[in-house]
Amino acid sequence: MSAAMIHLSVPIKDIASTLSFYQDILGCTITRQQTDRLDIDFFGHHLVAQLSELEAAHKSITIGRGNYPLRHFGVIVTPAIYDRMLENLIQAKVEFAMAPDRIFIGTAREQSVFLVFDYSGNAVEVKGMPDPQQVFAAG
Image (cartoon, rainbow, N blue to C red):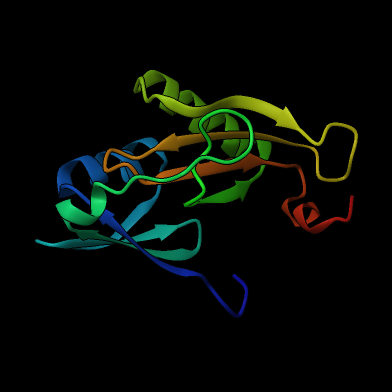
């Protein structure tokens, strides 16, 4: 783990579907569960899912190709983890906001990518790269 980690709070509509999505499908660890929130180890970062039906009903503009939400977060993982997450999402019949694709082909930043909405409507992007540090490569 690096000396710093991201802390992010996202609104959720209910605890049960959030547990299912992050723990059962994405493989994250729930580190604390309370009646109104979950603390999640999101690939070494601190994700807090806080119950707020009003906030979870957010709408976003789109950018890029197709329906790509401006407000999103995600993780960059190795291809093996990416493939496992993708298979879990397909088996769970989770709808993709951005279908699995390969982008930046032929560059140091070449990556597999998809974007899904969790069950509360938060957009989660997953990128698969052999060397995740290459995401910072120029060009």
